[in-house]
Length: 266
Image (cartoon, rainbow, N blue to C red; front, side, top):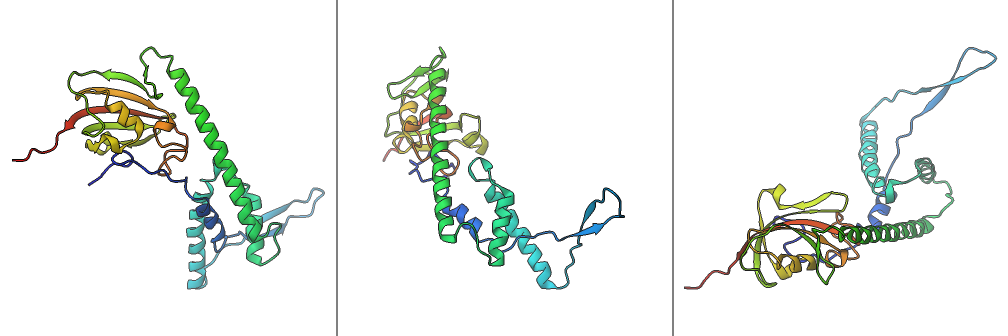
């Protein structure tokens, strides 16, 4: 059984989570719990101040409690979706005003039809900006990383450091290998690790990302390398699995345990 996320078979990149998922989350909410407030007059004075007192919420029947619970459920899910917006930015006041207007059936400043276009255009532009920033960050990192005397580079742009060297045969692209590994983003985020799962993995070298296919062929069983893989040798312009961003430069620590030989026939 395949137990690892990214490397056993070559991943066919998909777009980041569909923008429509967020749009759906924003357009299918049923209700928003709004606190009712009543002004309470203070004793008259020259500087009279109005205090706001919240009206206690009471559940008079099952429909009331269901309605409140529904708002809590949907509101929690919606908040999670809002936090996935580009850079987590949104104007809560405008969001609630527009939402309440829609729920009351009043006219909105942006029509439902145009809202879809506004969202699509905003998310597309935001994705393009983040992808450009990710690509630039990766290129700058690799440029600086190449200045490290311990770093070696191949013609393809793959960079690596030999942590532990071993003598012996090296695998070919069609060989199956057994490895332990850990993959991180440039910020140190671990997105996949056989060490964390507590078991090594086996796969054929020509069924993984190009950076692995090339890099592991440099190794002999018992060796341990650190690879710095540019986006074009990793998951490309689209990223992978909602975890690896588009244009992401990746860092892998790989320990080659064995070249798995096919069983011999009797």
